[in-house]
Image 1 (cartoon, one colour):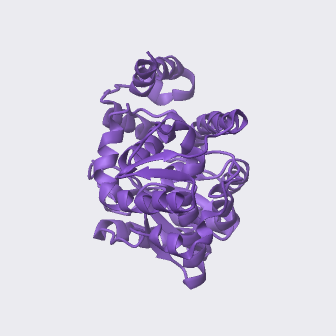
Image 2: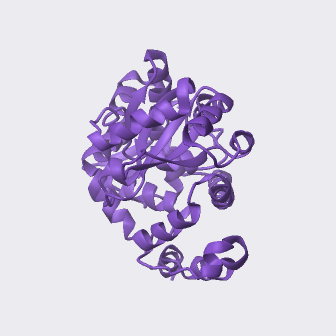
Image 3: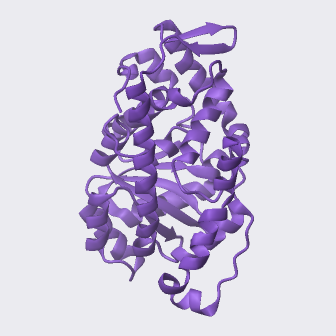
Length: 337
């Protein structure tokens, strides 16, 4: 995608878009972060906490904490991970997959404690690419434009680099979100459109009723952030404002709309392949998927002995039925009527 221009050139806007990134993490989060840093070793650059625990958007105590783990290079990070966590996937497999379709997602669990983390692992170079207009998909930006916590950085230089990436993500939301905005919108409906657009770009178990939960949980942080962004767009004659209501002054060309639509279609295809990587890399991947469907879609799945023993052979019919009937798909069909 081509940006309007680099909005982060404004130091005032950049500072405003950092709001909430330093919000305090819970003791449980910090215990997991300490373990994450230990497991990935000296290659660890930063840890970003995102998702339902960071947002306080209905996470259950037993659900995994979500992290982006930023590393210098994949090879030493995955070798350290394998040495620390024991048998599982080969480090060489993770390294190859990370270079083909970043990020990889791996599971960690605190020894002898009921705390587990779901870690999306990115090199700093890949983080910078995936938070720029050169990104090939929406996986990373679709998570980082929401409320996140920068909970650990190795040093001042690392902190500056990761903060710059997070600010870029927030500034870029108008570039990819503008085709999906209503004719007139306030800050809340702007953030809602971003969430709905991002959810539609992936295969997820949730219906759109998850979006109001996220709006309520993140409003205190993200409404001020995107108020500052929209005010900047008004000041630079990109948006018009009447009270609390905004509208676009210049509308996208048909070619730009097509470009953004293709970006999200490609993103959804790549998201589908990421589910296949779960099988190769995510410890207890089948249990994780079943629990997530139960938690987010309200569907309790009882696997047969054959499905548990040979899921790649016997789980396909059930998976296809769920993809066809999942709440997200039903909500989208209803909205299209």
